[in-house]
Length: 92
Image (cartoon, rainbow, N blue to C red; front, side, top):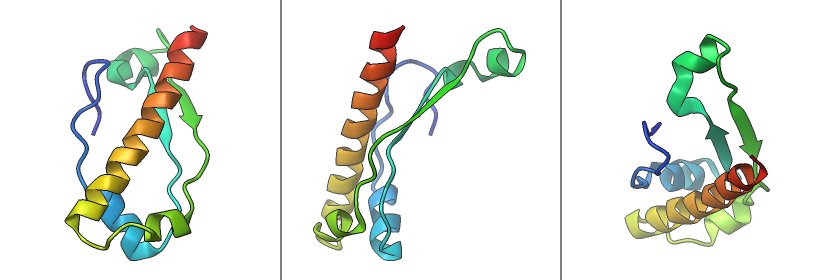
């Protein structure tokens, strides 16, 4: 879910649950500027999309197939997205 501020919203375990069920890797992705979507569409500001290194399906499968495992996966993904955000913010 997009945040209207620069802060992240609390992560929900859905990412972990979906990745576990699909046996697929996760690609952490950060969208910079999407909290000002209208300005992006009007070309007043730019949106930047940054992709991180994929987290392998084996890494995803190493977590327990239960809510606590899903939450741990999601929190790890959010940590990686935070690192991507820091890279973008430090560039500008």
